[in-house]
Image (cartoon, rainbow over all chains, first blue to last red; front, side):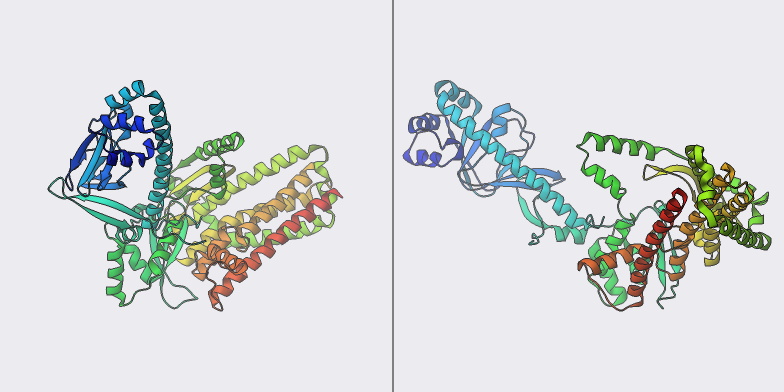
Length: 166
Length: 407
């Protein structure tokens, strides 16, 4: 992908690339791949193999996890400047949730090979990337904890379970 | 503190075309309306009509046979209870209620659900407050060890469910004599003589208990052991009464109550389906065991040489037996013993203690909804006041005994 001024400006606002210098961003941009999804198109399903992460350039992606039958719980909406799919980027594990375009979407894709290459050619930039990624992981872990509490609250309210009376 | 808005889930529901979907936000209130409360299995509860002296409308008494908890249900609540089959949603239950009664009380369903949950008739409930407190502090090694020990003790339960033939034989071969007028007269006479003996003995408590002198530990252990045996006898008589009224004794056994109180127990809940007189006799006769044993103990103490171990032992046993009688029969002491069950049966308010404590707590703290002026409210206040005074009196009496014996 060519490092246009527009793309560089976009990447500067992506959380994990905030600390990158312009030369690092230029190298990174060369390793990114553009991808388009039409509305409701599924990017990957829960359980699929994968080794890429995605940055949303335009549109919205829905991340959902199967609950029962044809019902899935929406875990999060991914908006422009945010990213998803990073877990498989690191460990190559099956996708833990399904990603589907809620609207027409444009994405930037970063593959594991590109990440490895960046580690060797621009280790300083890679270190910044990993540091930012750890912070993002921690934030998402906290959000998951809140989601568990919220799910519990939902269950208590939905069942009318009287736990305070004890 | 501001109450948070109802929790919501966002769900993605796929259509036949795999990629096509619909997003739905499901608020917890929707889940609540669609929830399908299910009462416990049929064998786990009993329900019977009960007429109260306080209210004109008939009520129903619902018993959890596993936990021995009772609930009083109104006719409307009984109707709702019947709908809670696990297949009918709350919304449908509410609709059925409106169709039947032509009106809707917005509080009745949540209130009933809370009552049923408290009585463990809808969901499984945790154990005592002590266990809940221990569970909260499980991180501490000592607490964890204590919790483990209590759990292990709680698991000790020696019981038999096939006791009906045994109690029938016991009744046939002499147990029936307990329920004759002669036995009743003998009981009264024994009580009078025992009270007389106690009166004489109590003129000088100190001399009487001096016999424990060098054998205090032996004395205490023996008195405790005898009392423990009398608890078993107490339960046996409950069983005999149940047989007397041609009802079934379901279980007899030994366990550690709350994990640390060793006790015998008997399941005579079948008597609940008999007449009120039968329930009263069953409750009262068990406790009368302590009257008889206490009277005998006092008579023995009065006849024993003054200051001897026998006199001290018999007198101490007599005191404990009669205290047990009072505790068992006296309903106002915050303990749900035989007398309490007789009282609530007569009043037709099975949840008297719980309601009374909750009401007075509300009055004192200003929390909750406090109603005023009704006969039930007066009864609740009376129960708490009498119980508080009684417990204080009971403690004062025991302190007096100890002080009299040691000074």
